[in-house]
Structures are given as structure tokens and as C-alpha cells.
Amino acid sequence: MRASVVAWAGLAVLTGGCGREPAHVVPAAVEAPVKVARCVMKYPDVQAGRLARARLDRDLAHYLAGRPGRVVYAAHDLVSGVRLGRGEQQNDLITASGAKVDILTALLAARPGGLDEGERDLAERMITESDNSAADALWSRVGGGGAMSEFYRRAGLSRTAPGPSVYWGGTTTSPSDRLRLLKLLVKGGRGLSAEDRGLVLGLMGRVQRDQAWGVSAAARSGDRVALKNGWTPRPFIHNTWAVTSYGRVSGPGRDLLLSVQTDRQPGEGAGIETIEGVARMIGTRLDGLRPTLLRPCPTNPIP
Image (cartoon, rainbow, N blue to C red; front, side, top):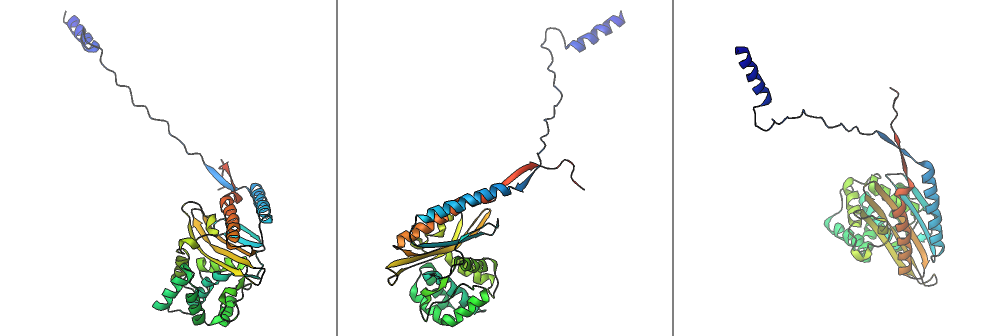
């Protein structure tokens, strides 16, 4: 009898009692599946890059064939190493106010102690406002054409020559030399301190709004632009214009140095339109010149 009572009691414990809801069963914890990152490697797509380059060269040539006057340009992206150019060694085009950066850079290279307060004010007006009187004063302080010739020699600007006498605007240069000057300001050398280079590029990044046209058309949203433009009528050359623009366009994955020079233009506006057309085409398609392929990582890498 005692054994029967014990058995019934055990059954009651197992069933949780008569007339009650069944006990909730808590399921065992289930681990979520682990996601394993897929290993991929990037390789340059050389063939696609060559085709993209050929298309861009062809489209630029087609665009310029329909534009007036002479147009030459050079581009070098310091990040990807991509280079582009047409007539980039041609050195008989004047730079006009583009020479103002040369004047300031030469003066800084000759002044290890930096500029005095008055010279800094002149430099700011010369670059940001393209003030010609300020350029006259600093051209004189740097030593005129003779001193500028020596600066160009030391800086390796072999295709640049200063304007005659006091006419700094008659300085002739090539797109390739404009890029050498920009690279000097970006990378350093030739006696220029980091502070000197920062001063010049900083002023080029603050040119007044109505003078910020030109190679700035190559910029993407959020890119930084530092530039200097030149424009002048040429009354003795069939009443045409010379219009130039060069500078640095930098941002994520890009550090583009670009120079576009024109002359024999029917007007300032025509030159600006041509420069911006070239700059926009290069800026828009630059990334496509270095395409990449994605491939799985080797399963048995060599130790």
C-alpha cells in the first residue's frame, strides 16, 4: 500500500497536477550562424584602363576641335599616377596673372626668414584679388626678370621665361611647367618651408569668387580647390585674348594637378568656357582611368 502511494505521488509531480495548464518548456539556446567575411583582392584592370584613356583622349580632341584658338593642357593625379596632356611642352603662351604665384613663390624662396607684414598684405591682395599694383611691388622686391630667371632655373622650370622688364604678365610658360610649380608647392623643395607652401596654397584656395572659374570645374562635391587664373586682351594679335587656369583639386582618393592654357581666343568668356569644358571632362572621368578587378583571395597562399 505504501508503495502505491509513493508511485501516485511521483506521477503527480511528473504531470504537474491535474486540471492545470501544461508547464511551459524553455527551448535550449540556439546560436546564430556565424558570417564569414569573403576575402577578395583588388587588381588593376589594365585593359579597361587603356580603353578608358583612349576614349577620353579621343573625346577631348573632338571637343577641342570645335573650340577657337589654341588650347594646351596637362594633368597629373598624384594619388593614382594618371597623367594626361596635349601640347603640354608648348611654352610660347603667356600666363598673364598666372605669373603672380611665381612671384610670391620666388620671393619666399629668397626669404628664409619669411615676409614682413607689408609684404604679406601685398601677397594676399596679389593672389586672392589678382591686384596688379601689388604684383608690381613684389616683382620689384624679388628682383625683376633676372631674379625670376634664376628662380626658374633652380626650380627646374626650363620652359618658363619671365616677361620683359617690368611686364611680369608677359611671362611665358608651358602646362608641364605649371604642374612642376604646383608639385613644388605640394611636395616641397627648393628652399621652401612647409609654412611658405601653406601660405601660397592657402591664398590660392581663397581667390575671390568671381575669379574662381577654370580648373575648379574638375572638382567633385566636397573637393578642395587652390588655383590661379590669368586673362588679358592681346590687341596686337588680332584683338584676341589669352586665358589660362591652373591649380590643385584634392579630395578623397584624388590629388589632381591641372593646367589649361589658351590664346587667340575671341574673348575672355570663350577662353573660360573652353578651360572649364576640358577640366570638367577630366574631373568627371578621372577615376575611370584606373579601374580595378575584384578576385577571391588564394585558398592556399604561399607561406
